[in-house]
Amino acid sequence: MSFQEEENKMKKPIENIKGIVTDVDGTLTSMDRRVNTSAIEALRKVSDSGMKVILATGNVLPIAYAFHRMIGLDGPIIAENGGLLYYKGKIEYLNNIQEAQRAYDFLCKQIRVERLFTDRWRVTEIALEPTVDPDLVRRLLKDFNVNVEFSGFAIHIESRNYTKLSALKKVCDSMGLKLEELAAFGDGMNDIEMLRGCGYGIAVGNAPEEVKKVAKYVTSRSHGDGFVEGLEHLGLI
Image (cartoon, rainbow, N blue to C red; front, side):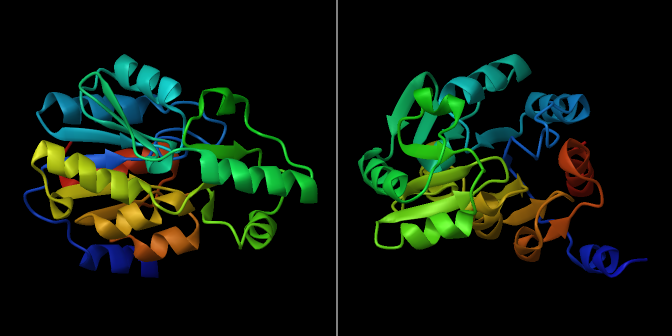
């Protein structure tokens, strides 16, 4: 038995989990963003059982909404890394794009960068193609009131005033849930606060070491297969 398996064995899941929150890209999909059908089937089973299911993604709301609808979910969507919420037909903007825009305008004068195709629908942050070093972007923007997050798929420039976790706290208040009653799933650096802040954090096997260190359970399988393994570990499927 490996060290990681021994460590996971000691990290028993919490009792009375009332909901799950999951990242999408890299957690329910492969690295080339193909949806893992086993993960979707498992997620639908969990939702149909009455368990609360929340999506928390760095992606834009139109894509997250389509994904949400096609699975058949009815819970909240946290999009743009916590920049906005969608729940029960209503959108709530938790921040604006002004500070990120200022930082981006400055960055363009320093190095060559390319915005994501989906940025035409992004309203609270700016996301770049990962063609430059995220640490270089952080250094260049150190004097701006922004966070620079690397999701594994894009470099996100966003206000420091919001994260997936801060949006999740707001969601919990509206749903009558507590953070400690949630199990969180993720694979990216932008999931660290969420995994640490919820009652039980699960990192899928493809996550960087920094993400795995904050999780209470690390799956042996990667991407969507790891998500299914995490649900099995929790006894939810």
